[in-house]
Length: 325
Image (cartoon, rainbow, N blue to C red):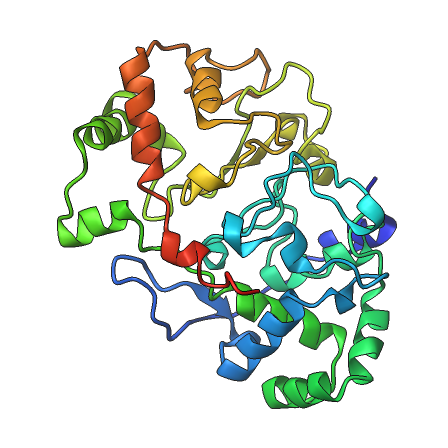
């Protein structure tokens, strides 16, 4: 269920002034942007990282952001649907935080306009942290380490602003661009015959880049991919009330897709092979289904080669970055 707090928060749209991050992003990536009031600093990133892995932010101090966004799984949890405090089930699959700095909207239906705004949501969801963010801030005020980090980062004591801003700052550092595919396009590392065949299918015959385009393999749009004839989760329509948004969800990045299973907004497809078969079928009939989705045929070798190419998007250095956490 969507709480009143959630609805209030997500309907608050802010106008931001954006400025470039000074970062060590891959040379073949553009520079991401961030709100002018929350530019990156070592102190802000350090505070955000500590908060991200600390269960103090949940009501019973049993789960943290990293419970669902596990670094070892490219910041997902490999569950069909996420579990909050006391094993409460969230109604959607956990999205990856891979390259989240580049997103122009947040949550699976694009309901939130910024990382800072999105960071509030888990606190007020009964089946996630279930802890008012003001109470979370009070907890941090009683921890001298957090008070010190907060003052260093934002020149003020822990507050909802500090918590959400620091979490956003840390997440903006989660950049993945060192996969085999990246080395192929920047250092001429050869792909195998199977991977090369899959690459050709992806970029040419199958027109996958209609949605999964650019350096991050997403066009950041929201669309209906024909997963159901009748959607148990209505998607973006809950925000807009527009019938054209029924069953509409964000197009995800394909980076690290090998390890972020199960797939789709509800975790209903367990393997890449089954995802491909879904698209081969053309998807289920739905009034809002993307017009590009039509049935097509691949033989077993082509399916295998496409999967092999998608696996070249796995960035092991990114996955292992916080392996000790």
